[in-house]
Length: 182
Image (cartoon, rainbow, N blue to C red; front, side, top):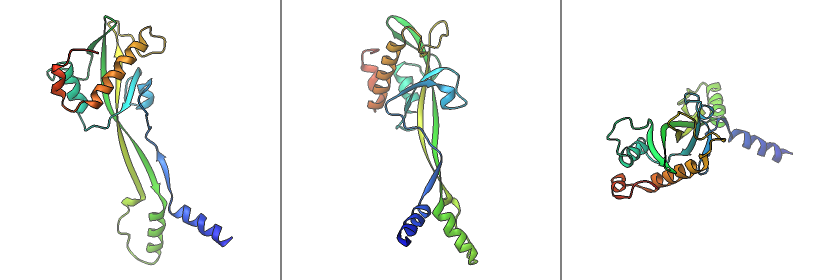
């Protein structure tokens, strides 16, 4: 019985409780952007994790679509099945935040013995992940990633190839020598 009590006490003291959890997206996900991050538009979006540094996707889009640093991120034209579409992208961070029990208990015990607390920053921990969110519209401003849009699957294929090219390319200037679209 004492052993069980010891194990239970040990687990409680060394545990941490998640308060917020960043989603773990394997590959990509299509969902309403506003449900993913509150400040985003209420449109269906193509979402994937961005393991690269800040503004890398901006540089990729700027180079690939020859934007010359003009309106990069908004209404970038691309063609699928001989029809022109436009994508916009957003970068968003979601974080996992946990509360650590052990440092709180240790500091409470030290404070009880009149020992000053050295640092209370260990009570919580936070790890962030960055995501790219792409929305697509046509010339009539229709949400092209809605489930009932007629060319949705072809557009998703294009976005998956775009994502793959972005993640595998390190020198974006080499994109200038490639034949245009997929």
